[in-house]
Image (cartoon, rainbow, N blue to C red):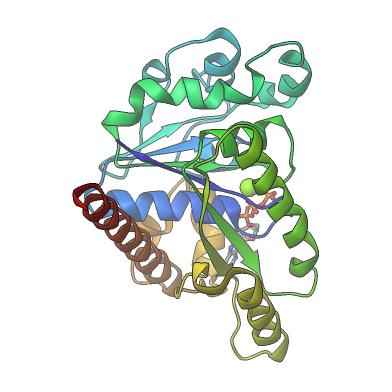
Length: 266
Ligand SMILES: Nc1ncnc2c1ncn2[C@@H]1O[C@H](COP(=O)(O)OP(=O)(O)OP(=O)(O)O)[C@@H](O)[C@H]1O
Ligand SMILES: [Mg+2]
């Protein structure tokens, strides 16, 4: 069964979408069938893997509101083994549209259930808010990947995010884990980056990925070509960093599985 990872942080512009696109593409490049789900009405993850936003394409809104099967909505991408379930602007209204629905927090989880066996990983790109779409993503997820920029304001959102995770665990999804925190646009030469990183280690300990994502212009350019950085410039430092992050994610998954099977035998 596929492991569902939500890429989340309510702060805007910290690298969620860049991480969702390039982690998903790097997992697919490691021969693991992967689905990228765009849960953000901004649709950046969709266009970043080549979905034509002018086109009239089936999208997540229809899955969540009309119950259209996810398998009818997923599209292939240019990366072998990487599929995308695109977003649409219509998702903006979903907080209100689902307000009266009993199962409103479970719509993404229910939509993904039938395709879980088709993928090794399902990567959800969240919007920059703790709204119903993010809540749906956290309820669907097995693990959270939290991109953080090592700047002063990064610390301010952390306790709110942790409170939200605890509330989701208590109310809807007891198995939810913090898969890891990844430092993005990281510049180890600055004291501030290092100080903030040290502070965050206090919160998250070994949940912080060893891989850090450097500031790299190729990562910023690739989406305008509708490509993950792997297809745009595979030799760039950005591409290398995301390939390495994918390896860490795969290793964590292997050690979790072997711990589970040891536990099951004991
Ligand atoms: N490592 C990086 N190096 C250079 N530019 C980056 C890097 N990561 C992200 N960017 C750029 O920073 C901007 C914000 O990144 P991104 O869209 O991934 O953040 P986000 O958290 O998804 O934003 P939002 O909260 O609006 O959804 C984009 O222009 C992106 O191209
Ligand atoms: Mg984004």
